[in-house]
Length: 114
Length: 111
Image (cartoon, rainbow over all chains, first blue to last red; front, top):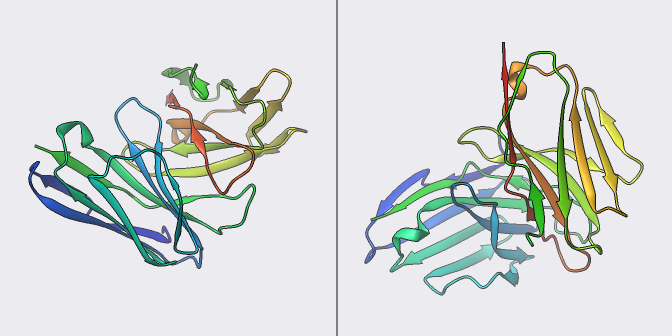
């Protein structure tokens, strides 16, 4: 149903591991986003890419490293994470124009850091 | 003060009831406003945009009061399938595509 896919859907990793989250959108959009959703807290915007260029880094720790090789793909590289980084990580995409526009979300990756 | 504040609920209502959610935002220069819906363990999806003149989509009515920095969502004739978390979302002025999400209001509709 959704035009935005994310893999893996679930991930358990240790604090010394390195892993990557992948997002792909099939909607022809030019803007892509990473959000973090922790229990009982609002969605937190992490990064925004417009036409493959990063236009927003919301003071995210360097242990999270985004990569956007093209307008359809977005990665989030993870290393030396902390248990408090356990959350649902959502990818979204939109047309990429200024102003009011709908963001379409992927199903998310549920991450547990041990 | 949080940028977008919502009553977390839960709102427990019977089928057929009318329920209203409120939301306040702190940035008076905010440009665009939305309600998103998030089902349990699912991703958020746009429910409706909110316009200054107010707008309606079937059983759902959204209102915006810029002077009071207040947004509302009214659901009439509630259905079991309306059970979800409703997220108030605000787009600040300027810049690209940045959305600020409220923590959400949970609605549970029971038979």
